[in-house]
Length: 102
Image 1 (spheres, rainbow, N blue to C red):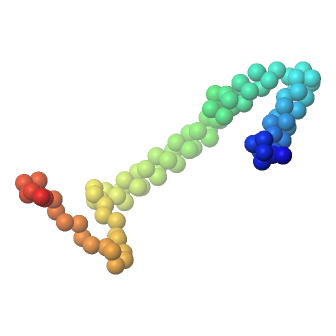
Image 2: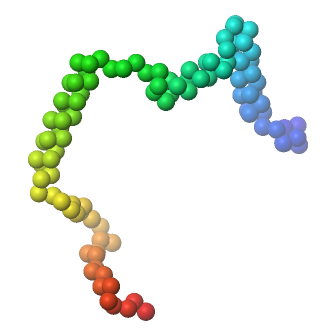
Image 3: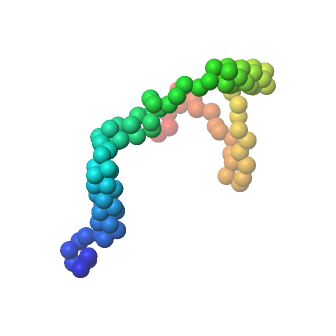
């Protein structure tokens, strides 16, 4: 009957499950609006607790040290060229803006 009516039974069962969960939450006294707002704020990070100051300082110092070391390693590299391997690898030709391609 699903093929003749055009209904996917998996979708119906998922929607039925969501409806049952919402009904259960409403009967238990929860506000679906506040729960969804709290879930959205938690996902976006607005309800996240701030990190401990000692942990934040330790991470900042570690990343600053890593940045200094990386800058020292990459000091002489302003335009890196990645090695290309394989039979299709050919050197890039120069483009002359004065030449006409036609």
